[in-house]
Image (cartoon, rainbow, N blue to C red):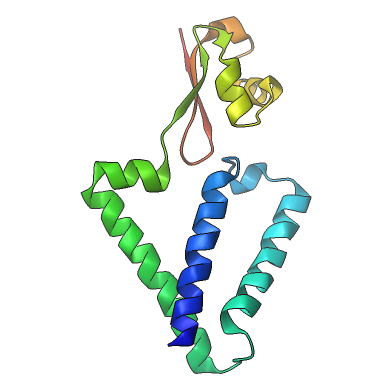
Length: 145
């Protein structure tokens, strides 16, 4: 039972930690950030399992994480409020060709990153962007005039 309790605590800590970090898709991560994810996984494993190297302990920890993921999935499916809290909301970064500096600052996102996303979608000028939206997935959607 101790493993289930520790796995639950670590699950919610990791969830809150990831909600507090910048939104970014895996493909956009720097090499250091990818290494950090691997190291974080090992740290989490040690914190959850402590000295228990049994198969039962590993299964309990994985089942606990699976349980909480299922609960979160069900809540976001059933409740709009839960979806807003657990997943967040899209953030408008550019409106009618003008960057929204406050939104960029909140996300710690340089305008150059928005312009890169625009170029990847075939838009070569900031003035042509009607909306640039940072989606909850971390991707930037560009809507042109």
